[in-house]
Image 1 (cartoon, rainbow, N blue to C red):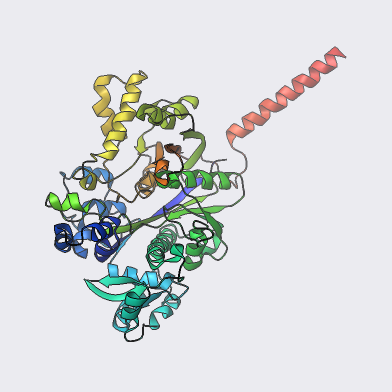
Image 2 (image 1 turned 45 degrees about the horizontal axis):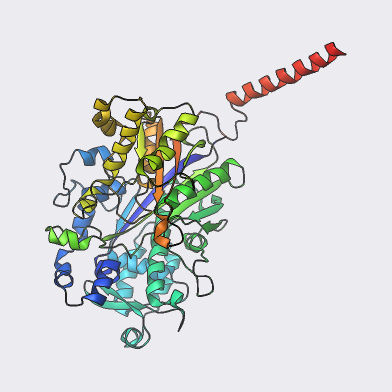
Length: 513
């Protein structure tokens, strides 16, 4: 019996100072051209928190607007504000930068984050009012840095500065004197990923109402890696985040696959639950500081604000079949195999047409495809075009080539089966998963019956292979039989047929005798 999608939680943290001081585009510029106009102009290109919250794609990400409502707003969206925009949404929240820095401090169990006293107390007061954060965790904010300690650590010990509103208010220490894998830069990056993952887990629990103690396993699928010089990617973000979120009965592990990582993780989670190994598995990921402001130069050149100013995260709960929630059909899996090749037609065919054909379905039988749901407001000014639309056109062209639609119907196919993009461009974050919350809602409401989630990854970035990667699965309307209710009607028919065959064989043997 298939496992089901119980719910999804999403998280954004507005981090303008991290864009300037921790995004790879900016840190690289400081190394190769420290006096560049870009570095001088970037401060004026940052949005304030209110503008970030009111940005329509961000409101879609946390569930206050639907993709259809976003598509109805004429693009571009960077100069528009969503009416009635709120910090908290149906699926998650948008946290201001100071509170997120406080969350980093809470998630630091080795006393590597140092904050000055005034900032610590200010943040503590705000987080005490946060409905999802256990106040017992806030004691770490009572231990402020000593006078002059932050400056000394940054100047003499290679600590990474923490900025708020342009001022240094703290730092992240290196966790080892000579181990590059535990440098202050890496620890900073990993704490950001952990903190955003923890926030996503808390949002998931809040949205679903599931008891934290009921979570058996966590699979973390970001693009970061934690470890030391002897095991650089040893992990385990999953267990670290589960500990902080209060999942006392959970264990877990990390899955990596670049942008395809979340889809691999979801297939694994669905399989574990279907096999009866675990009852409740969470797939989660935090965001990346490296990709903050990744396309900032192009945005400023075209008079746009820096739109990649948020650290993102998500968490998804996969559980035993309850007879209600949408099922993850693990019998319909698209796979980009070693022998698939890298041509766009081969890639999209292996992930969509081939698995659907094996299941006796057409490309048109899928109501919605969730692909790389990157926000075109971000990608188009950078020359990458409209990524989701390009994917939908390839799927539509494949449907036309296979005779499932007419060539003249390509535009209608894209409009009917596709969606506009709304997710931050942080690799694994836009890769299919932003639609899970909406898909669950729409399937339960009966507006759609089937959605396909397609994850693709650029494995060649790791310099270990030139191969591309991809995997896909189908989320479908529940068949109506829960795990506890016994066998399904289909299983009953299978058992009857098997019994009849056995009886016929037994009868034939008697006749021969």
